[in-house]
Length: 341
Ligand code: P6P
Image (cartoon, rainbow, N blue to C red; front, side, top):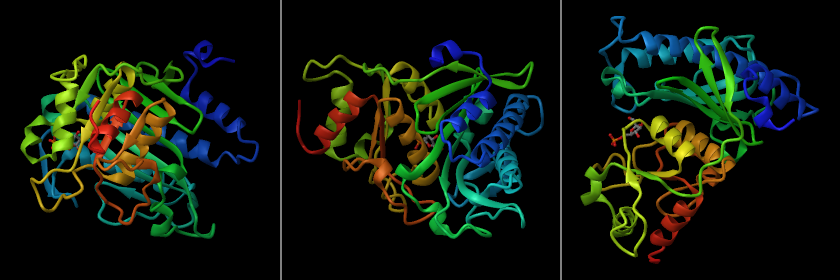
């Protein structure tokens, strides 16, 4: 039955239908995803209450990225870790908030890995800008017994079995793909259930928005600068896109997925400790790249490599990212080769 006619089905029903399309499926991935959904509902409730509770403000700690860890970050990380370590289907997990991989509880090992950014954009919490969770799931490559190894996590994005995000905004939405299109589910907090609201999402061909922090203009290379000028419509008669950048990757990406747009975080010369830009490959760029390609878009680095082809070497490896509407990312590739329209 066409997905459009299925609007309003629950996410657990969609997950069951996904499972049915894989005859060899055991139900493990479905069970894993259902526990992930529970974690998303718990974090959503907390994010929406944060303005009322005393949870706002800093926790006083810093994470591996050297960033202040906000209390809600800590809560979200604990919630996803706790759900995943006891779901019985994870052999190892990686979190932006954890320096090292995290093992499941003894006896609860399984055949998948998950990497997640529990609450991306958390510096926006105290100013009430939407934030999000990003997740990436792989099948283990190590022998299927006991805890996994780092090799199970360091797989290219092209090997992901599921990729997705949860955006905690004016409504909480979960968007994911298991390789057969991108589906968006909206949480009805009155019943605590995600319902299919955006079946088979496709990034519009026309690029309506461009999202990049233009304060870094002086630190970009000329190809990036010329491409941003092109997006502004200041030359080659290109229809200008509107600039939209709220400093929350999940929110910027989600808007561009729905309306058409391109998000960029290229490398810059500001800081020697981030030569590859700021965003992380494992739990930010790779899962969003799978979503983008499944929705008809593209995702590359600022030297033209396909994000999904990159084999990670380190858990928290950073990567430059250009992602969004296909035609615009292809135009970016031209500029990166030194060509001009
Ligand atoms: P900048 C948030 O910290 C984040 O990882 C993304 O969500 C966001 O797009 C980006 O960093 C913002 O970084 O350097 O523009 O403030």
